Each structure stands twice: as C-alpha cells, then as structure tokens.
Length: 501
Image: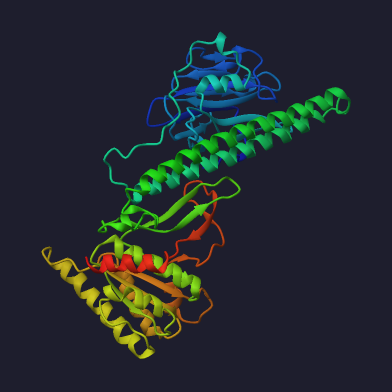
C-alpha cells in the first residue's frame, strides 16, 4: 500500500529500481534530472525527457521514468519532475521494479507553476532515501532546467508556457459558497508550496553545509568558506523565489475576493458589500470568520460553512465578545433564506440586545426564564419531527419555513431533558431547515451525557481571535478571527430589511 507523503517529508528507499509516474487532468511531460549535491547537472546529457529518453541509470519508459539506482554515477541524485501546459494539481507515485506502489504525493500548483519538482532520490550516510518536494516554476520546464544548470539553448524547444493565471472574471456566474471554498483551497495550496519551498531550501542548506565539513582536510580555508557562502546564497535564492510566488498568489487572490464580494449573496459577503443594501438574495452558506497568517502576508480569506447546517454552531462563552459573534451569525442565517424566522431561548437574559434587535423576525415570544425552556424546546422538537414525517410520506407536503434557533447560556438553565430535546432537533435540523446557534460553556467535564453529546456534535467557534485552524487540504496553519456584528445602526437596518421579506 502506498504511503501518502507531504511536501518535505522523507523516508528510507529500499527499492533499487524506482518507477515514477504522474497524472493530471491534462497531458504531462515527465522528466528527470541527474544532479550533484548542489542540485546541478554535469551536462545537458543529465536530463531525461521526451526528446532525450535515457542517460546512465535513468530512462523514459512509456508514461513513466525508471531510475536504476545501481546504474547512477557516484554521488548522483535524481530529481523527478513534470511539465504541463497550465498550472494544475498533479498526482504522482513511486513503484518498485515489480510495479508495487510504495509512495504517493499530490503536488499542488502555486503561482502559475507549470513545471513541478515532485521527488528527490538521494543517498544519505550511505543509504538511499526519497523526499517529496513540491517545488514549482512559473517559467515552466525552461526555468526549471536553467535553475539546475541545464543550458536550454542546447536542448529542443521546451513546451510553450502560458502567462501566469489572471484574476478570473465572473462571466455571468453567481459566486457562492463553492467559489469561496475554492479560493480558500487555492490559498492553502499556495501557503503549502511556500512553506515546503522554505523547508526544501533549509534541507538543501543543511545537506550542503554537512558536505562542506565532511572531509577534515577541506573543512577550513578560503575554499571551504566560499562553499558555505554559496550554500547560503542558494538557500536565499530559493526562499526569495518562494516568497515572490506566494506574494503574487496572495495579490491575485485578494483581487479575486474583492471582485467576488460585490456579487456574493449577503450571507457570504463582507458587511461592506452592496448586497446588504438591497433585498436579500438566498445564499448556500454563511461566513463565520476570516483566516489569516500574518507571518506569510496580508491575505485574509473568508471561512464559510455550507447550508443547511449539518450540526449546531457553538460559540464558547456568553460575554460581550460571544454576543457579537452570535448576532453576526444570526443576521447571516436570516439573510441566507429570506423569510426565515427566529426562536430565541435566553433564560439568563444575557442576550437582551439581540432580542431587541431581532424582534421583527421572531417566530414567537422569546424565552427569557428557566420555566419556559422545557415547553419551548419540546414543542419545537415535536413540530420538527411531525414535519419530517409528513415530508417523508407526502412529496406534495409544503416545505416548512426556515427557522433559526438561538440557545444561550448552555447548559445553565437547561435540564438534561431539555438538552435531549435539542438533540432531537439536531437530528432533523438540516431536512427541516432549522439552523441552531448555541452560546455556552466549553467545559467538557460537565457531568451530563446529553450536554457532552451535544457539545461533541457541534461545530465550535471561538468568540475572540485565538488558537489555530489547519486547512483540510494541506494542514497549513491559519489564525482564525470570528465574524462580528456590524455597527448597531447597520445591524438594525439589516434586520428591518429581513423582516420585510
């Protein structure tokens, strides 16, 4: 079974014959470079690709590059790479001589890169190892060849490379949750490429500095100093190039977000978007905050969740910060489907301002005391289950009106039975268009089974910028800032607009 690698990850290499393959949504040109410890070829004969199908120890075999480690010259390393006509994700794998795949690596594009270094095969302390790379070149194979010492004037004309990707126009399309999610994915893959390039440059620096001091006879003196200086310069060049590509990616994505924001439905748009000044249009998701990485630049990416909500949104705490976050989420949920009505259960009275603000869209009187919690929640759960039963037996049954249920101060003021009613609602919430927002304790040691189940099955959002968020594609680290309510006057105007729907 093939092990999935991430950029920068290395492992021992047991196979003496390695078969490199790659696939993408468009045709690829596979190539390999036989390089020294400085990642430079000795001559143009050290490149294997479609116009030069073999060199010592490496050959192009149909749709694969085959590396015979025992056939390589002493001290050689092999870089396995691909070229394409456009920047796109590439899935790669390594197999042994019998065809058994033992390593896989999905290489994301970055900065319009149309040539990608995928794997490095190298010796370390007398043993062969492999490393997943992920280094991209916006200038295509020509830039990649030049970076590794190939005189491209001596080579056949490489694939013509397109200009770097432009910011896409909307072209009549309606931006949605999927559009913003794709921008987030692009941002994450760009960040991963940037980080992997830095890690790769550092690995290379460490290897070159180790090689420079390996021989006691040559580890001192002018030549040794120059070798170390060159190693540091090469590291800096790689890192500078990575910074430039990431900066270009961030500028393009920031501009795309600016263009898209004006056309997004209000539930997904920024509070400054013109969409909030007109009759609301339905949305297929809501914005819950922004992701940033100050150490990587100024790009701020919206974090959104799709609708209908598959589980409650849980905001930790019931202080002023959490009230701002809850209010923002409620306004966005109301805007996502015009005509949505609100149920507020606030036994502690901490969210009085939210109640006053959203009164025009109440489905019924808010619950402001402990005695009203049980009948309210049981009534909502019974009604939702009956509507779900009717919908399952009668396709022509009218679809229930969308509702938002806000529960504050959980679990204080709620019995275990009350929380069981909430769990009943959670089971049918998506189908019955019930969105649940909870402001409550994050204490997982509370001794109530219903609380623990509800807490575990909710999507948690901090009420203030804190902690970290790892994206689902590359695991890149982001700082999360929750969405907050706009100024009071703007919030009141938004609710008035929603209440008129």
